[in-house]
Length: 152
Image (cartoon, rainbow, N blue to C red; front, side, top):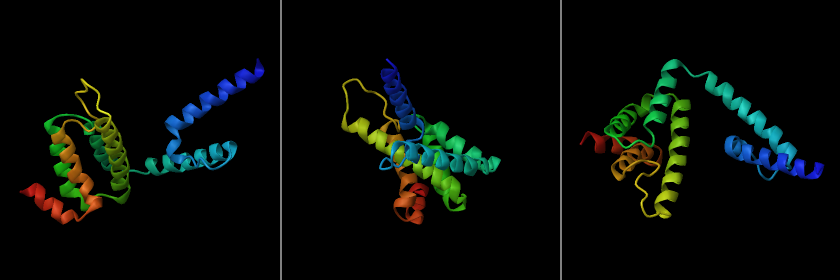
């Protein structure tokens, strides 16, 4: 019985780690070392985030709020991000880039495995995805070219 409890605890811990610490895990390490390493990396990330200024949090929170919505606010936020990208602190750019790339991966998966009746995608409607692509182009190409494409 005790052995079964340990297996359950282990699988619960593994699920928790996969949900919350996956980005910090080196899956090639032995389990105890991987956990210790992930905890150390997560702690460093928390400290990095605590150092953000209130205006930096406002930008990140606005981005997170709009990500996945299907409204005109998506294009407004994307236009603002493109127009101010060069002025943003590197830490803000990196957070937006990491989270937007993950959103594109999830949206691609949804679109590639489309199920009948699915009405909403992770990045919103096609026009919302196109707006997010303009932001994504900032680190995939020349920011000046893409600023011109938004300005018309």
